[in-house]
Length: 161
Image (tube, rainbow, N blue to C red; front, side, top):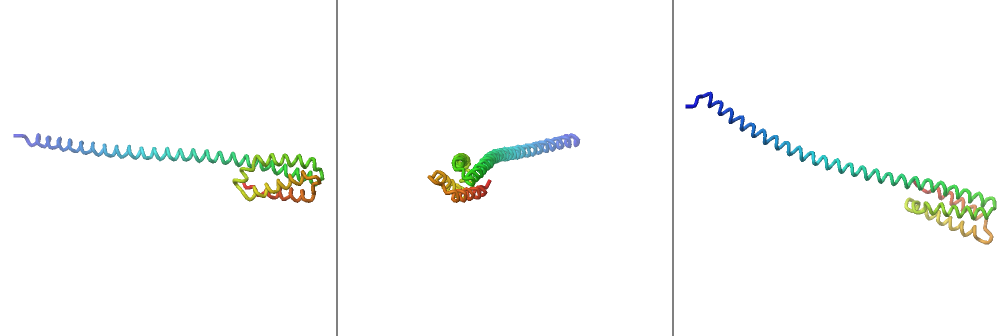
């Protein structure tokens, strides 16, 4: 016959073994869930890092384009002012040179202006064409040139950065 203490010890050991097995399964389940959650968090973090990197690159490109447009617009404004001054002084030879400079500075920013403000682009194109035609005519009309140069300068303010 088994002594009660030994029997109690056997049952206790069996209970502890069952409890240890159950705890081991719970620990295994929790570990699996933690690994899944960690994997999901890692994927989310990687996605966020990728999106931040893409956004930063896009912003960098946009700042570069805006800087280029701002610099080109300033040069264009200066050339337009110089053209107006030459025309107002009646110095059509200098005005022709300034119109050429104006055309070159315009070619550097025209695509960006067209993209950002189609209406401003059209106004500037029209005024430039009128300036070129009139300044290269046999007898340039000073009043017409002054008015066109002033319109051109006014339309430049329509360039939105």
